[in-house]
Image 1 (tube, rainbow, N blue to C red):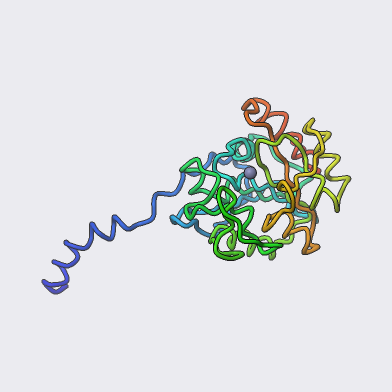
Image 2 (image 1 turned 180 degrees about the vertical axis):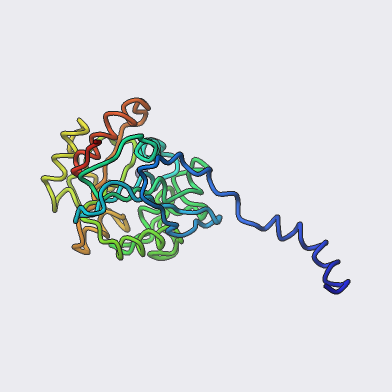
Length: 251
Ligand SMILES: [Zn+2]
């Protein structure tokens, strides 16, 4: 290495380090029954968006649980963490789980991503320019988190997607809840939640469940827990209930 290069490295090294992405969120505790994992993409601030595979890969219908889109809704990631850590083999379901598709929002405890975009208004389905807390971004699919999840889902084509949210307390009867009422009824029954039409206070624009269901690839449904469900209910009753609605059980 030339003397000049050595000096440049000495001077620029720390600057490069400052510009590095933030450390990834601590890897979740994963039991030996988790089959594998996949990096779906990276957030605005460079955090990894992870998916994990569990259950029985021979089951033909693939299911997906999206633990979190909005960083200020902690119940879904808690439920997914309990699935990943469960010390029992999971049968009857071919399952992928995404702890959070908004790791920057989770780190900052904000609904939106690091660009201030509500990811559940950023999908390419009835997209509209929205502002404020539902800011939908400069265009459909503008955000790396949205693109990572949509690219993955359009290849995987799950039969069922459960998208976990708070705090509206119910199982959605629109989108996948309308196209697959039996699935919706199982979720409502197994979770003990009422069935409600979540219409985003008029029409949903750019939402994930609307986008996926409209493609005809499967039923994507929103499940809203309450504002502050007990951690015990989330990791126990709710975890078992969601898995049962997808056909899963522990052996
Ligand atoms: Zn939400």
